[in-house]
Length: 229
Ligand SMILES: *Cc1c(COP(=O)(O)O)cnc(C)c1O
Image 1: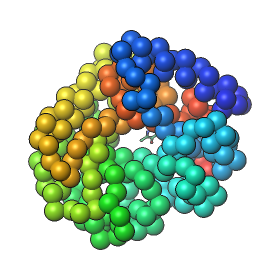
Image 2: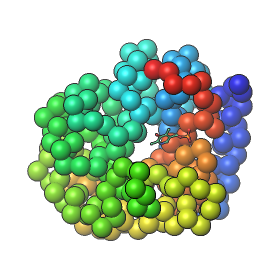
Image 3: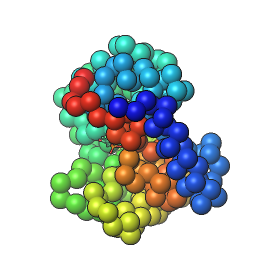
């Protein structure tokens, strides 16, 4: 397996190119290292490369790594979160990327000690198997969050279809950006909605070209050591 450093050099090269194509400032992009398939050791290697955003998609994985690393990192919960598991993780994370239903918002409101920065997850491509609100429902959902003192909608998140068709991937990211601009224009105090969480190992360059401010990269950066937590 290649070192994180080696992988990071080629990712950084691609990131820089995509930022340049889009005429963007490098500071406008955050790289989240998705460590769900690697060990605590490998996660520490990520931190040694000055990557401080860590993403996990299961409570067990998040807590194991949080226990070993603590507040040195910024913690992102990127997977779908069961309502009954909210209390386990909500006070250990800095960002939740998968707010997709009112029952989840209600549980967060009950369990969180501080406001939580949330991305509302949108199923832009309308694939059956994917979590997230439809584009048509997203704005009404966000407007309904005004009474929740523990929820701050910092942005929108999506996953593109798993396809080689770049046009489909690009259209998905463009759709999320358009929706984000619509929400931001509402100027809701609880939903500034300035961020876009989109792009993974296979499509982060397209996502950056289309305005991603957080990319979530797993296998291309840290590899895959199987399901560990
Ligand atoms: C696993 C995962 C990623 C990272 O996927 P890679 O293809 O390994 O980069 C990003 N986002 C979410 C929501 C994930 O579950």
